[in-house]
Length: 51
Image (cartoon, rainbow, N blue to C red; front, top):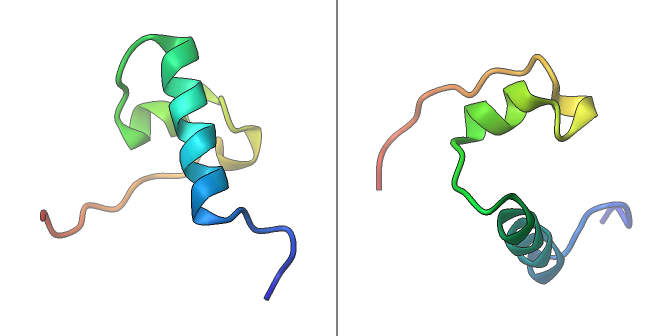
């Protein structure tokens, strides 16, 4: 297992922290386009199955 990966709890904390700071809801594609995660700038979300 790669030690650079976040645990599920760490990932959720990161998301909740970001959402609280931003004060709004964005789609995944909007987050990618915004450059908030520079390493993911330019990536495109591929549509998938709904729940």
